[in-house]
Amino acid sequence: MKIDSFEADRAPGHAYQTMNLAGIFVREKGLFMFPQNRGRFYHDGRFRTLRDVVNSYNDRFGLGLTEQEKDDLVEYLKSL
Image (cartoon, rainbow, N blue to C red; front, side, top):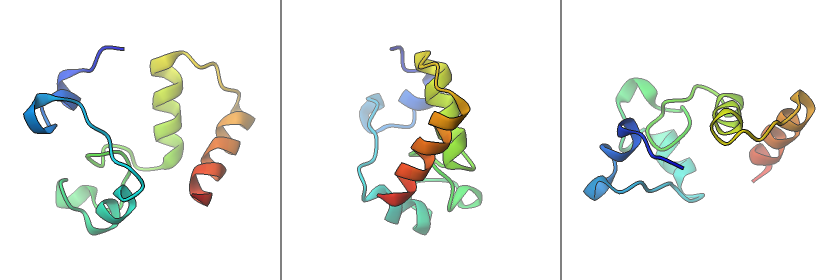
């Protein structure tokens, strides 16, 4: 997988890093992202919904998820 500039240039030391579950706190408080992205998803708030995140990963990795599988995954993520 190739990391694009949008991701790499925003990470400390230009190395891609992702949030752990503590990222929920960061998302809700709007830390490390533009204020207008507060409450949004991904490490920098680029996605408005969890479904947008799932769609991005499905497209990027060619997962071939069905609509039902996407719905199930979103519901699972919300349960964490």
